[in-house]
Image (tube, rainbow, N blue to C red):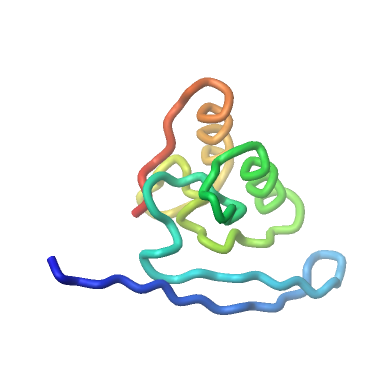
Length: 105
């Protein structure tokens, strides 16, 4: 179709719940989530594994540091992009029961 897509990013510093400064890299645009969701820890090889589950659990229940690409964490394909415990269940099903992940939007 002749159209080119680009991804843009930025760095964000914030204070976590302990008062420590944290750096988050955000990717914006169509380049941050490609194919299937699940690469929550932004693995350069785009692998979905137990470390993605750990990142998602940490995000939801411990330090609330958002993933660099929120679309990757929407593993259940919620149309509103909400990331919650159902994404954890979907990722667990994928990792341990040969379930499926949502397609990136």
